[in-house]
Length: 300
Ligand SMILES: *[C@@H]1O[C@H](CO)[C@@H](O)[C@H](O)[C@H]1NC(C)=O
Ligand SMILES: *[C@@H]1O[C@H](CO)[C@@H](O)[C@H](O)[C@H]1NC(C)=O
Figure 1 (tube, rainbow, N blue to C red):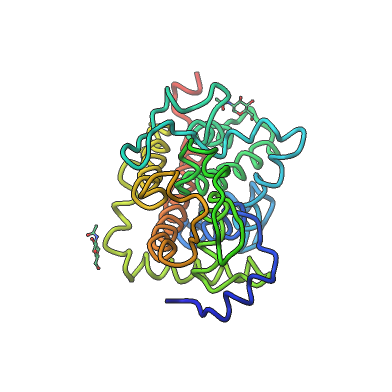
Figure 2 (cartoon, rainbow, N blue to C red):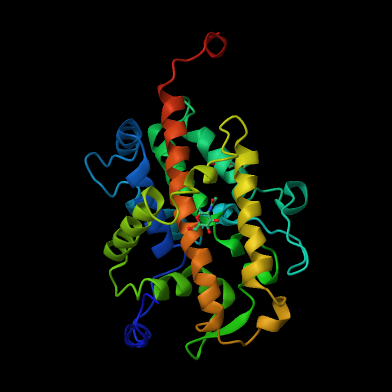
């Protein structure tokens, strides 16, 4: 176990940083910065006007959450998730036609904003904004409850965490990850960078080294929606196995910081690692496409 109950008890007095919208997103961005090619780093540092800054991705990772509840940013709210109308725990599935709203969803948003980064007709500030969305949404799609419709992705399900009321979505967004690292102690960036370094080691030479290449199977820049759908289906499968193993009704009011947490934390760990590693690969593909000479066809 990687946290002490003393630390956890201390943490409860401290307001938690917001969401997968916080700590996990920042960690995912730091992992990605550890794996991108040098030319990818240069490309995104330039686009994000963050030259020479090592946290050029981490510093924009939560921006999409900060604007989604503003008047102008309200339309982006649906891009953070896909509401899989499946039937956990017996059936988990994501069906784009069934589950993606007409206004969009996280699967189409990844494709939409990826193409905006590369759109030469777009002003640089909008392409930078698109990059911030991509960094964020590749994180979101790896949180199982961002790939589920039940009770608005668990937002409507009340549970207990160390004896206090939380909604299930929040537990999966934040509480599990924060307990796993022993609390974030008002320093989410420093704690996230540390966790990212640990996960980076696990990917390079530790317990994830034998599978990290398999994490990139299905990554196809020519089929961006298909790629994102693969990620959404993988996240959604955990809804049946780990989020609602006994079904949505059975979890209501349950204390989740013990036995449930023990099973859930490894899912959070691998999903954060996958998200960071895949984000790096995706940003590499974007930077490579931006650098590629325009084909004759495109020029004509
Ligand atoms: C793509 O993003 C733009 C905003 O930049 C939005 O107006 C449009 O509806 C989006 N399209 C889809 C399919 O999400
Ligand atoms: C990687 O190794 C672990 C044991 O160290 C094993 O449980 C896991 O199944 C392996 N994964 C792959 C893809 O081989």
